[in-house]
Amino acid sequence: MPYIALDSGHGKTTPGKRSFDGSLMEYEFNHDVTDRIKNHLERHGVKVLLTSPNSNVDPILTERCRRANSAKVDLFVSIHANAAGTDWNSAHGWEIYVCANTGKQAQLAKQIHEASIPYLGLQDRGIKTSEFAVLAGTSMPAVLIEHAFYTNREECALLCTNDFREKCAAADAKGILSYFGIKWIDEDALKIVPTPLPELTSTNDILESLGIMGIVPDKKGVSDIIALEPQGRLYWLCRKVLKYIRDNRIDARPEKPVTLYTDENDVAYAIGPDDGCLKIVSDKKGILDDMIDNPKGAIYWVATNAVNYIRQRI
Ligand SMILES: [Zn+2]
Image 1 (tube, rainbow, N blue to C red):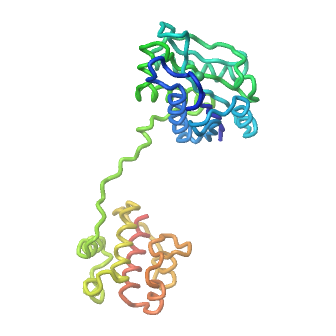
Image 2 (image 1 turned 30 degrees about the horizontal axis):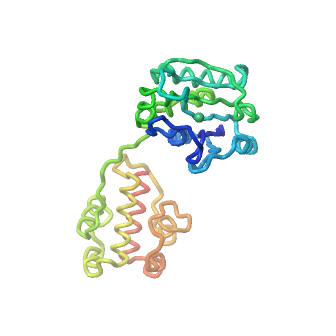
Image 3 (image 1 turned 120 degrees about the horizontal axis):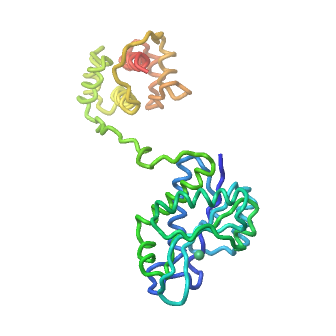
């Protein structure tokens, strides 16, 4: 698993490092984008180290390097926004720094550059070299990204927007992932849209659902027992069985032959907490003991039917 250090430039206490009108604090942009990159990398299975996890603190540069070096990360990526001059000015665009534009760090810079320039729509100021302390002091391939200028009115406004920050984070993450040959997957593609399944809680609804499944068409007046003791263990078991079936999306499929459980110990084991394969019952008022004490009783019978139902369909 690749291991990446993300280095958010500056902190709340760092002097300067803000737009002339105070609308953008550089540390805030850097930490926000870093958190977004972290999310993208982690959902692709990449491990992340934050060299500056608390935005209220600005660790000195040698400490940032030390953290990355001692964790033996594979790459170091420093996140910044750019500044020039002493008043609003026209300097603008995107650039990335490496210590020397050779070897693995050059390859990393190239990948991030390729992911960023067409996507962000900023002027390409290119891949530059500098002996910045975090680049010179780290012992793995390292880059420092300057995403845009907060000393430029238009780009400062852009740096404040959620949309641009998300684009910066996605571009940086794509570049890092492509360095490792990991294919980018859009976040939306990972979101599973669950089928809404309101939990059934009334006795009648639960019994009807279990009845339709063929689990409770009725032995020794199961529904009568539940009606008499609506929070009793039989009701609780029925509810757990139904919840298990619904949570696991067990639906009608062509039946395949399975060995049916008929021994109470096997049934208790199958639905029970002791590494039982279904994990339905973990244990209300000694339900397993009740099944073993009363092996032809209503609880045992419901459990057997439930286990058989589930085994025939998964
Ligand atoms: Zn900076």
